[in-house]
Image (cartoon, rainbow, N blue to C red):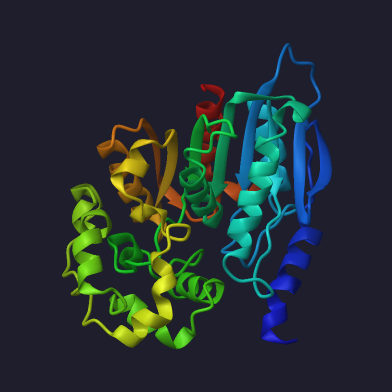
Length: 345
């Protein structure tokens, strides 16, 4: 079996072996143009339009899909009494950036323009995502600011998201670099493959040699480990970052600076206009510090933030909430905290 076919095989087995549970909600498979989506609607009668949730799944643009996240979405829809739209965006190995981003964006716009059809209150639409889906939620929330033809999002729910592709030497990237659930090398491989960057540039990216000095002067106030609270800092020396600038490496990798893949780089004016946020971070997750940095950016601009930090949490743990012996206390904490937040808005 060719390596390029492995994601297809893994997704097939994943969807085949994970039993689906509708949790008592009505489930419809639809297409918005060519984009497959799945709609989850509570069966109980409602006195008026319901809250809407738009959800983008995780999986590094390699794994995951509508079936893999079916149980999570149906459970969220039931427990929050919301209409939930899950987007089945295109993934590797067949599709590179910006395919996933555009699918999520276009499906969202389609849904937002037709909320009445789905019984959704336009004043209560939450955009959400897990892992790379959290990246989609953050970047699409930014991109749709100022669209007069669409309702504003009520809130953004970002569950251990990846929010930048530039500083791979943040503290959590070092502390959890060999995490079995999302090791740094695998994360960087996914980033390179999705952005169509040759893997030979991974070392330059790791060292920050792809960052022009004037870029770092501009962005270090948002991307530096200096912005991470002291409680998360462990003893030891920080590697020199960024490394010596390599212009050729920059020219081959500069898509990492695009806002749709690094929304943490948005300017203060954009950040200040964003809706309130619910952020989940996990202590044993390589992406922990992405969340901490975005939290600081939002709070510095006066955006209300509800933060759920899970001390025993690890990347992907929410997906295991209903997996019985493979479920963890942190899985239930993230799920219950997310439900509680959404029900409160």
